[in-house]
Image 1 (cartoon, helix red, strand yellow):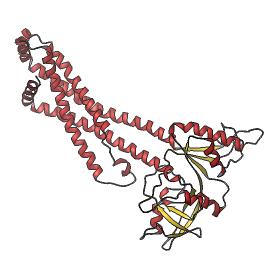
Image 2 (cartoon, one colour):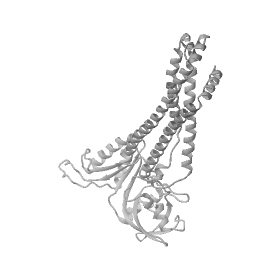
Image 3 (spheres, helix red, strand yellow):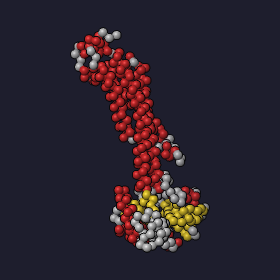
Image 4 (cartoon, helix red, strand yellow):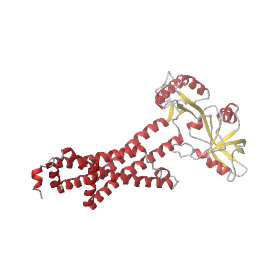
Length: 413
C-alpha cells in the first residue's frame, strides 16, 4: 500500500512541479522562521540568565536600612547595622542556608611594580566565589577558608585590574600594595558576563578575606550579608526567618521592610523565566502564523488535486477501492509536502545557527544576540507543528475525495 502511495505521489509531483515547489518553499520558509526565532530567543534568554548569575548565583543580599515603624517605644528612623556575630547566629538558626558570607567594602588604591590604579575592594568569605560566580583562571585560586581563619594578606583580582597592574606578566604569586599594605595575588577572575552590579563590574574588583579587611580597617559593621539557600524554594522562608531573627536582636518590627533591604537574585531569576516564557510564546506565534499560511497553500493544492483527479477517484471506487485508501492517499501527500519543506527548512536553519555560532563574535550587544541555541525541544516542537498542519491540510481535501460518487465522477469534465 505504502509503495503505491509513494508512486502516485511522485506521479502527481511530476505533473505539478511548479505549484508543489512553491508550496514546499513556503513550508521551508515558515520552518526557518519558527526555528530561527526560537533559537535566537533561547540564546538571548540563556545569555541574560548567565549575565544575571554573573552578578549573583541564586543569592540574596541583605543590608541594613532605617526603621520606618516604631517598635516597643523605640523611635522611627533608627539605623540598622549588621556585624560578623550575626553570621554565626544566622547559620545556627536557619538550617535552609547553604552558604553565607560577610561582606565589607571600600574604595582602595592598588600599586604594582608596573602600574597603579583605584578600584573597589571587598572583604568576604570563601563561599563568595560560587555565590558571585567569581571563578579563577587556570593557575590561580579564590581565597579559601584557611586564608580567612589565618587573616592572610592575599588578594583575588578581577581580570581588568590584573591586566592593568601586570600588563605583560602573570599576576599570580606577585606582590601588590593595597592602600600601602603588601598583599600576594593568589588568583585572577575569569572573564564573565554580568548584568547586576554595584560599585562597578566584578572585572575591576579586588577581593580579600573579611577577617583581614576587619583587622586592617577596623570596621565594626558589615556592608551586607550574602546568603544562598540550599534550595531556591526556601527563598521566602529564609527571608522571613532573617527578618525575624534580626528583628529580635536589633529590635525592629518583622514587617518593617525599610529596616532591612534585600537584593534578591532568586526573585530576579523567577521574573526572568516568566518574561522568557512570554517571549518564546510570542516568537513561536509569529513563526506558527507563517507556517499556517503555508499550510493553507498545501490545502489549496490538495483541493486542486482532488478536483483534477475526480474521474480517477471515481474509477478507483468503482472497481472496489475503499474510502480509507482514498483518504490515506491525500493525507500522505499533504504530510509529505509539509515534512519535505520542513526538513529542508530545519537543515537550512541548523546551518545558519551553527554558522553564526562558528563566527565567534564578541561584544556587549553581540554576546546576547549572536548566540542562538538549536535545542532538541525546538526541533521536536517544529516537527509536531508541521505534522499537525500537514494532517489538517490533507484531511479536508481527503474527506471531499472520499465522498466522490463513482457514477457522477465518470461524467466529470
